[in-house]
Amino acid sequence: MMARLMPFNSGQVRLLAVLALINFVNFADRQVLNPLLPLLRQHFNVTDSQLGSLQTVLLIVLAVASIPSGYLADRFSQHTIIAAGVLFWSLASMCSGLAPSFAMLFLCRGLVGIGEAAYAPAAQAMISDSFPVEHRALTQSIFASGMLLGGAGGLALGGIMGERHGWQYAFLIVGAIGVIPGLSAFKLKEPPKRPRSEVVSIVCLLSVPAYVAMMIAGTCITFSTVSFVTWGVDYATSYKDFSLKEAALSLAVIALLSLVMGALAGGYFADLLQKRFPYGRILVIAAAFLVAAPFLLLALQSDEKWIVLAGFFVASFFMSWYHGPTTAVLHDLTPQRAHATAIGVYMFVTQIVGALGPLLIGRISDASDLLVALQAATGVMVFGALLMLVAIYFVRRDGMHHPRLAAFRAEDDAYSVAHPVKGD
Image (cartoon, rainbow, N blue to C red):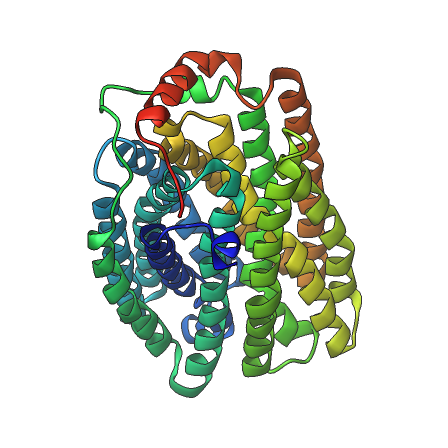
């Protein structure tokens, strides 16, 4: 019975558990900032645009560093790259808590992005290369659940520590927490490595129309979701009469329940639908965002606290269907030796443009109000969901394995016969 529920061996379970734990710390580190925005506004006497730039600089640096990080992860030791990234961002986060000025805080948040860029492409590639392809969306969703739990933990930690002890302690604590799981990454067992001379160029990846369509859609979705995560607590405190602690804890509980359940449900249904349609995972992503949109608008418009929280709960559940299936689709579209590079390029494009979300939403808030700004972010999310239909069109036209990459696929198939990936 257990074998059917979790058809993985002990080594695979350990790998997934360690990487999910590191992902927890990763997003606790990133999201601890958001409930601290009102405190930072008061402490440094800055505008909403400047506050939005703290997430923007992190995401821009993350985007720029993702391509070289993915390139290195496809060719060298993935677990070493992961460990170095975790330790680097942990140190940068602790430095954030010691920042004497807004400029220094801005710099430290940018450095956090370098560490995160070193981690994500390598970790996602290790997972896809270590598990059977039919479970790809589910395993990536389990990995993503660590991110979502970490985001909830970061919100709660920031809200509690910020209100009781000040924003500095929140950064110091979340940075220190990352050291132990970072060191544990050195002991991870990697899947068999291919010869380093076997290279899939970025130009080849960008010649796959479905891959490009996924990146454009992902850019819109990243713009929207990062904006909501950044400004959600501030919106609840400024427009819905929540206290800082109440808003941070309420949204953290919502994230803890709805996002994790949604990520796992999305991975399960994406793998299930993929057995019937070659574009099944993409269809699940698009449908989930279209269902989420009206609940976001309900939460933004309502004056009743319970309706606000219920709307965010349902919307968050469906929005989190995105994480695991998206990584699975990107790896389905690309040869195995390019899995980390594919994620790196995707992160570069989506994060470099999506990073503008918190900044632009802050500017719209300064010019009008935050309600209008977040309604605009919802519209961008819907547009991104509709662009997923373009990716489906290309998959139906060209197949999941584009002819341009056929030679690499043939070598991958031969390699996979010699190095099969199995569970129990």
